[in-house]
Image 1 (cartoon, one colour):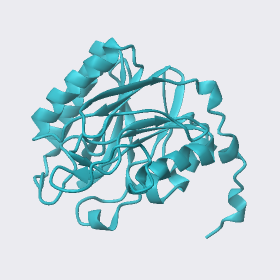
Image 2 (cartoon, rainbow, N blue to C red):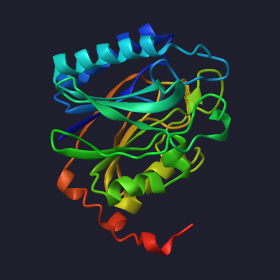
Image 3 (cartoon, one colour):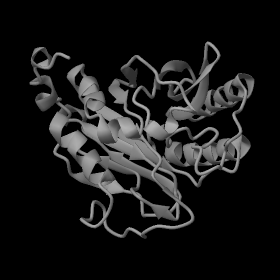
Image 4 (cartoon, rainbow, N blue to C red):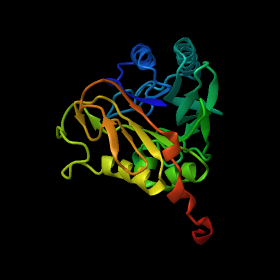
Length: 263
């Protein structure tokens, strides 16, 4: 199975995000990818230091989702599309799942918010598994996968073969230019993603924006914690890797004994 990770430029607005989505999805589909994942709240873009402080309406976000569904169907590819989303009048950080037939299969909410996000989004309360073309997967959004490893373990324990990790880490203004994946001087993010794969014996696929100063890049990591491939730092594009889902046994995750950890 071919998995694609999108590394788009930070979108100027909702319309620009859709334009990039169309271009990157077409590229992934032309390279025979079965599913592609975009970064955290890709539509309209993660609210960074005053950027994208506008909150789009539910109608605007629904229209964008409908357009993405049409792109998925036209190109016969599944899409994981993180977005702002309204539920009963409250706004959430979610990742929509769109089938290769353009059907909206549902979404995963971000349940563990970073403290800085408490005034922007409401926290979700449920976790879900999804399936496209026989691939069972879960989604852990940014802060969740970095600091709440149980979000990935839940998915693996319940049969996920891969966990997608859309995130946002970095900016275009200042920072360190990374050169080597998981280098010791770099922030811990890539090391944490490697650990999520290794400790659960599943694949992990990560997606970030193509910031000039990325704190981690998009990557596809195998069940032994090895980085199969990663996107060059700061470069927009599509990363694709073949995965063998039979290797994603979830062996270590399934040895977890939840009865020992009661709160």
